Image (cartoon, rainbow, N blue to C red; front, side, top):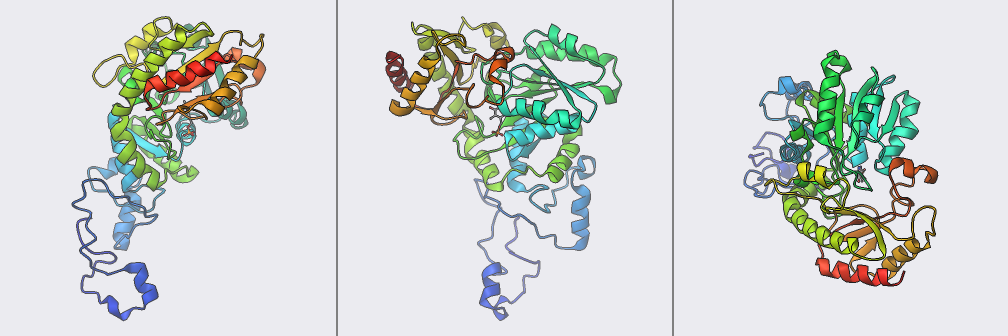
Length: 440
Ligand SMILES: *Cc1c(COP(=O)(O)O)cnc(C)c1O
């Protein structure tokens, strides 16, 4: 990267003998503008393919790919975007670091990352135990697709670890959950799961080992780092809190180094590769501002959760920072920021009074439609971890893959509202909430 040559290695090449059509492809063979050695911000590296210089170096590159052992500390030989390239690789280094993992592999979306982690850990005939509350598309992946591949999924309430021990069979290979869970913020005790799985693994052969996988999207690594508690793999939708601005999609799997090659090969062949421009944006804007954004969002979420909790028209508020929340004590133990301070996140789930499944649901609809029409600081939209506060109705939106009559079995109140706090002044969000609550 430090030389000043744009194409081949011959610096005596005279490009003036070539046509304009050709010249506009190559530019000057030698130019002092081609200097990537002195950048402060990483340059966007948007190249699908890489000059290999010689057949020997090309062959070496293919040998080194997905060969962590053979790679040593050699500098990488980039070949083709889908195998690896500078922006993604730099982002992966930083993501592994922030989650305290040994390695990270990025994907085009959170779903791409989830499919890859489960794709390398479970095969036909195996079983997965998952928490009963999951993001809608993860639920759909596990219940609509995995039966086709003869992978059985058992969804149980993992907030009680006894249910894990009851559900486990000799075919179980993966324990999968989100904590806090999307959308109701149920919290699974990381240490309790790690301890239970540790016991189960004592009597298992290495190839029958059970691995734990946590989708840490709601917390972000600012609020919680599950690998510190002994969890094997962490997943993120980079589209959310890590990306942070609502501009780019992405996903990542972080975990033990020994799985890196397999996950890279899975990405190479299934193809859910993170776009280089998105990798660059997340590396340059998203991750470096994570702490700054989260600190603001947590402070706002706390204030808003307290306001809602005290409001006469609100039936309940699920927010890990509230003492009244069922899972507050576990949250306090495991949701800690980079400095060890309680960090309850930026998501709130709440229910309006008179809005339970059996009662009149009109209030909830009226409330959300009023917000959609009148609020300046709340946008009716899915997603989260954005600069803007987003409000949505999980039962009819993010979690519509779950049949309506089954929502309660999955811990989801059909009338519940999910609020994802952004970077506004929280008093303005309170103004909008107050107006919307007045009309119902
Ligand atoms: C959004 C989300 C996903 C999926 O991520 P995409 O980037 O949209 O594919 C997975 N898990 C959770 C908890 C999410 O909120």
